[in-house]
Structure formats: structure tokens, C-alpha cells
Image (cartoon, rainbow, N blue to C red):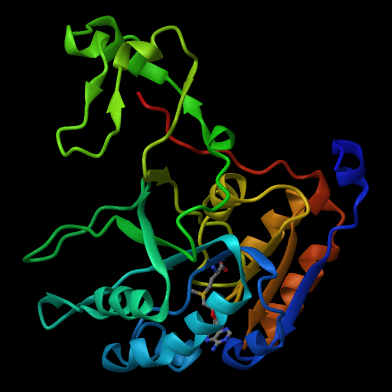
Length: 292
Ligand SMILES: C[S@@+](CC[C@H](N)C(=O)[O-])C[C@H]1O[C@@H](n2cnc3c(N)ncnc32)[C@H](O)[C@@H]1O
């Protein structure tokens, strides 16, 4: 389809109140291009969402991931923002267990991105340091999925003046992978280029703007994955929508979106924000890393 016709196509945003375990059932098979979501973590914010015990978390989540597997297109991607907490001096293992059970369910665990919360404030604990990162697990149905890598390229930054100015002999030839993967690199290929591909570590600031929700992720987080895995007119789903960060940025980027949340007040708030004229006037915040 031409760019112009694509641009004229109507973009829809669908906000549904209720438990995603029930609502997801009504979505058609193979209809979603990207799921980006941050469900409540085990035992967190009990008063807000009831809380699920770490021991029950996997059983609670598997029927949801089963539905997501059904509604995702074969070329689609599921990004799950989740992090275990420390219980009794140890990290709980429910996230690791969930990954294994989702693989058994039919998902491929394709990649893990790290969200480095670069403006995290300092703290002190007797036996550990400030936790300044979260997991973004990537799951797919197939090994071949849509990925638009050029859309997330980053400025070369200081790397161009440091590493690329001191190339070794190996840097100037194709250095084949030592693990026999068939991949290789020739660092000198990057000399004189303005942009490079990013790493799987996303250095994004947390946001402190008042969005009437205490567990929001920054706009730049869903924005990055929407750019990487979708095109205009595609469908983005967030079954744990909260303040609607995913839907709002998807709408700005001319993607169709579906959001679900058990809290009617969040759904109402998101609908109001989506109706706001300002929405279309705002530029998305750019706060990505460079390689430097
Ligand atoms: C961590 S928050 C999501 C925050 C969101 N990423 C944002 O930027 O605002 C999780 C949300 O899931 C909602 N929720 C909890 N259980 C749910 C369920 N079973 N179905 C749908 N939403 C649920 C909560 O009301 C909460 O708003």
C-alpha cells in the first residue's frame, strides 16, 4: 500500500474495561502485530490490584500467555516487562519458571532486553545495591518475525572518535564468531557512518510526570518496541494498560491499538487522554542511548 493511502487510513484505539483473562478470548486469532505490556509483578501493589503470590504467579499468567499466543500473528512479537523481587534475601524464581513454562506452551524466548533506569535515585541496602534495571522479555511464535532494525538506529556518538580511530588488524578483517555461529564482524565497516544499531540494553529515564498511575513505564519504552516491530496501520495490544502509555504512543505513531484494564478509572482516564487534541500535537520524547 502506498505511503499516502496508509496515512489516510483510519487509526483505531480500543479501550476495554475488565479482566484480560476474560477479554482476550473475544479477540480473533492471528490479529495482533505486537503485544507490549507490564503486568503487576508478583506480590507487588497488593492493595491496588489484589497481588498474586510468587508461587501462584505462573499458574495465573499461563492462561493469559496462551491467549496472547493465539491472538498474535505468526510474524508478531510479545514484549513482557517483568521483574522478580527479593524474598527472604533471595531473588524469587517465578520469572525464570514462567519463561520455561511459556516455552513449553509454544513460545520461543527470542531475546531479553534490559531497561536500564538511567536516572534511578541512589539508595543503600545492607547486602545489595540499588536495583536499576528491569527485564523486557521478547517472545515470538516463529523464528522469522517482522523487525525493522533501521528504525531504531542510534548516533555513533563518542565511539566514532575512540574505538573506531584505533582499529586493530582483526578489526579490519571479518572476525568470525568463535562459537561457530556463522556470524562475524568487521569493525572497520562502521568507520564514517553516522549511525549504528543499538544494543539490547535500553538506557531510558524513568518518568516522573503525574499520570495518575504509580507503575507507569516511560513513553520511550513502548515507542522503541513499536518502531522496531511494527509499521503504520499495524495492531498493538496492551492487556495490562494502566495509564495507557502503550496506547497513547501507538496512536501518535499511527498504529491501531487495544488496551485492557480491570480498573474502570484508568480506562476512563485513557479514553479522555485519547480524545485530547494535544495528543496529536505532542512530539514523542526521544531519550535513547548512543553508542558513545
Ligand atoms: C504495572 S500496571 C501497567 C502500567 C502501564 N504499563 C503504564 O505505563 O501505565 C498493571 C496494570 O494492570 C492492571 N491489571 C491487573 N490485573 C489485571 C487483569 N487481570 N486484567 C487487566 N488488567 C489488570 C492494573 O489495574 C494496572 O493498571
